Image 1 (cartoon, protein in one colour):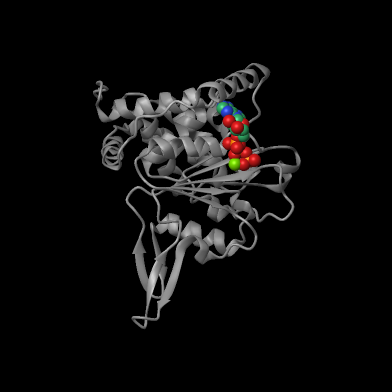
Image 2 (spheres, rainbow, N blue to C red):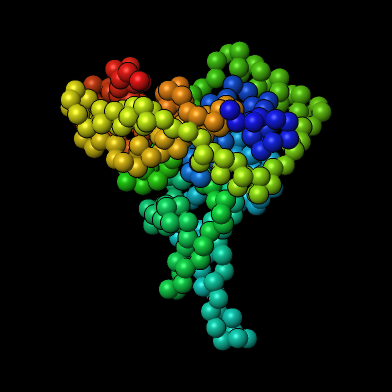
Length: 319
Ligand SMILES: Nc1ncnc2c1ncn2[C@@H]1O[C@H](COP(=O)(O)OP(=O)(O)OP(=O)(O)O)[C@@H](O)[C@H]1O
Ligand SMILES: [Mg+2]
């Protein structure tokens, strides 16, 4: 077993999870996925109606990380260089020098990504995929810890640019938030009241070297041959009968890799040195559903990629 001893790296990550959960009512799933993103070195897309604490969640995470944080509010007039940076002329030297844009941060919140024009989206997604920015023929590496959390509003369609499927694929996980129930809604009210009276609790900060250590430990989590087979069978199910009938574009190998990485990170967060079928099942929809395109006929019958993944999980024996 992993040693989740007080003060160990795994314990520090567990404490971070506790802190985030205590400030985000009923959002355990979101907290887990944000941590998975950090540990697996992946980027997260959060989708939901306005006011579901998407921004709050990322700000809380930023406060707890001893790294730097940037927030980009997307608008239709944004330029790619507003994100990546640009070559600036220095008259005193008579030369150009690269001035880094907001993507050069450890944690980057890209709010309302679907309001950014396609050129900006592709510049961002390219930086995400390559972990570097090229400008004026020179390549500039992004920091070792570089995590993008993008948000997308699910009710706003006018004046937005939906992310193309090929680019959605760049996100490790796509998290969809639903509305809280009455009890949760009340607890949110209580929490915010409490914060207004007594302030917000501070978090113990996690350093970048602790994060690097946690990422290294996550990579060593054991993913058994049987679980690898299970992941392959889930992904193959999107390409074969009976499910391929409903799917125009099935999941690519990037999906299998994402599911494996996310399952390992989930195991680590839960204090295990090996992944179990539950780790795969818990993240399968968030890791796979955004990587496939449902056929129009199935869509017109109300089928969604998430529902199809759920059915595939139902129909596939883990071991
Ligand atoms: N589950 C929750 N726990 C704690 N606070 C919450 C929760 N849900 C909503 N809130 C509160 O609701 C308010 C809105 O949150 P926030 O601004 O983060 O929403 P958002 O999802 O980013 O919205 P938008 O899509 O409009 O940007 C905040 O004051 C936040 O504290
Ligand atoms: Mg917001």
